Length: 365
Image (cartoon, rainbow, N blue to C red; front, top):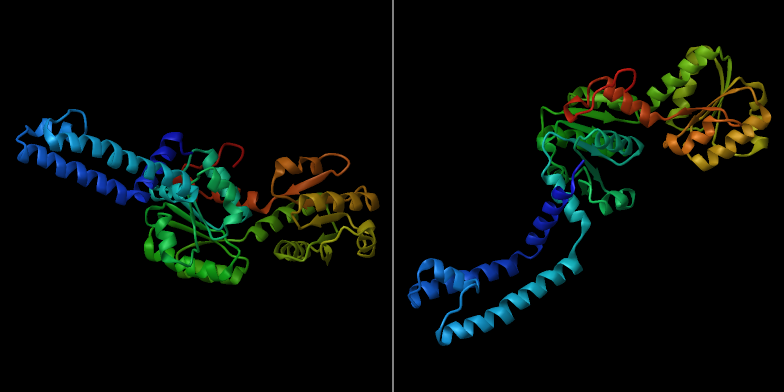
């Protein structure tokens, strides 16, 4: 992770850039007057420079005028202008962009989705460098205030990817949910960096495979990885009848995987209504999969499931396992299902993140 020194360096650079006109005037004023003192008044060059900087005093009318004018007008006014600019115009996102521009051999994550957040946490915690590219400021406001390396903007804009240092990146993961952005970003990334490892998370597997083939990328399906975990649990438990709650990519993929194992499935929309769950046959199944990741609502849903069926195996989708630990304990007794964590672990195990300092640890990812 970036230390205080790196952030202060970025802040100084942003401040200099914001005040370049005032600073250029100051340097010009000092240089011109150093020349006046040296060649006009015959002072040695070193003494002329120190006089211009107000370290030494100069005799004569011009010397006295220069001293008072420079102290009050030039130094005073410009210092006031710069300080006012810093307090009035400083934007933390500018520091974020400046830090991003310094990165080399880093990970670029396009899209601060669940997978994007997971990868940022993982790589940062292992001491690696990661730059986030996100168009929606609200999603990354906490990162902006923390002055993390980040570029606000659309990944469909070539300049945005350049600002994120894609040309110097070792790994680029496209984690956005927007299919148009995925397609455009793949093309732009390969134009800027033909050699980096490119990972494409695409909600449509067929499109993902086409993009992977066209741009020498690795296609990643978080829903497929989650479904494989559900299938493994179902096979181990000997499940024969399942209720899947959540008509989304994960829910549909889970149904497909379970039916391939000859598990009878009922797929319904997300609900907390006990009557709807009862009508779907929640009391008769041996496996319940909740494919939505709203923690608060999932607590209610699991409570309704347990009221009707205390013995079923329940797998519940989550993002923050720490916050969801309550679901893993009695009376809920769920198996936690995090598609983003599983996808991140897959990338670690496959060696994709090795170049940014993240390797599989013995016994776990």
